[in-house]
Image 1 (cartoon, rainbow, N blue to C red):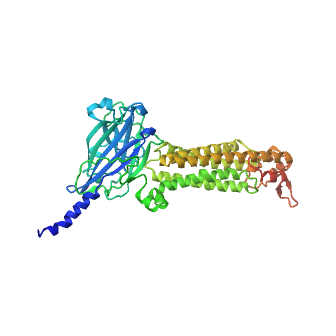
Image 2: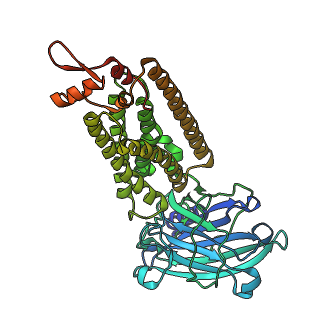
Image 3: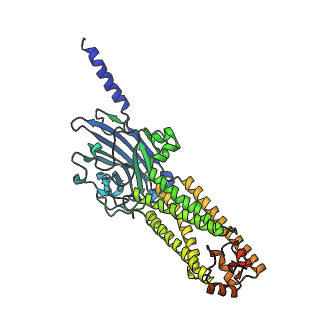
Length: 475
């Protein structure tokens, strides 16, 4: 009896540890909407023999032949980490009518660099201590004969020593990713079967798991699911726990480079480039100055966004969005050179050339392409449907506004031209950013065309019709 008081603290500690180590669970139920449908539950055990933490994971995926057309199409995956590169992924696929007693396939995979094809994990790329073993996979029927549930259990010994993305037993907001493909026709259901890419719309996402709450000092086996309704998340969320506690600022800090990249690119293509197009058609005496200053600022912002994108990417050509972005930014530099070359040519010959038309046409193409790639970037980031719809609506209204402004400015320019009976040469003068050349030969040629007249002191001045044209919008 005398030893009982000494044992009470230890017994109390073990009791609290057992109570607090409830598995964390995350579920998405989208079967009725033909969307991803899965549950995952995770528990961690501190393995005293390795001084590392083992991870026990249970996974369930619902398949409907009535909705999808077949039970065998596609795959569903979850992975520990904030991105594909370095993530320890668990991919579930199979056919209940073909695989029979063998059960579905749970393939453990990872990606070394970027958004590449996930390859099967082997002992050579898991680290010295890490050992991943699939325990059991089964098919069961649910609701009716058209819905089958694939379940799988896997244990990752010494998983906290994983060489890729950190798997932290101390994290209250461990990032995880999910992805799915509902259309791939599998040639086989082997663990190393080649996977087709997930859907770009609603085909992947992020969630966050409280690993600390799911950690204990004794192994309880594989976690069981506790599904209570549409919202069956336990110790898991669509948003980081820190973000929910501190709000917008924490959200920005959660992925700083991604948010900085988005800020630069959206500032360039949603604000500055359209503003520059409006400025050149404003009719102001300083419209040219406004135009090139705004466009230069927009170009620098776009270049900054490209640098940030490269810095946060594992490889430059990792996705169609990145490839398109690099092409667009490269053409922005070409566009700037065309604008400068047009100006140099115009002050020499007082008329447009093919470079002038190329500058205007390329500007239109870049603006539309930039808008499209902004939307693609938001989709790649995992932005919500409602937010993407708002941005798309803003772009549509902006396109209509810029188009209407250009149309009205052109009508105003044509009316002004008719009043002043401008020559073709003077109509193009709105592109000039500097004074008309002052050489004697050019002055005489310009004076013969009625573009300039001499002041008493012999210096050339722009005629009234050109001065008026400089106030007109770009035609």
